[in-house]
Amino acid sequence: MEKTEFLEKNIFTDLKNINDGFDEETTPYFSESDFEIVLERVEHFGIGIYEIKPWLNGKLYAVSGHEDHKKKATDSKWYKKAFLTFKTRQEGLSYAATYKVSKKLLER
Image (cartoon, rainbow, N blue to C red):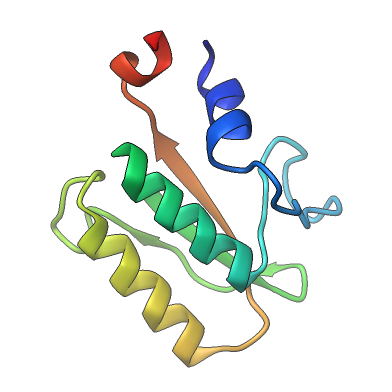
């Protein structure tokens, strides 16, 4: 199974991709409430997140990555903290992330 297929099937199921063309077509963006679900599912599967990119009104708001927090991509502490920081700083953000899916998960 491909990484994109795995994410669509197991992580993004029943969530609305709100990318209406403001970024690459292949990058799914989610509302704050949907992204919170994404993070819960990612943690459940042990998937890593390299970086989170929130956007505001079609413009990149900020970027936060696991290296900025000196944590492994699979350490949920960094991405939960980054998400909490973003959502308390600014309302109305849409969120995207880059994911690390292990070969083990893809081979299931």
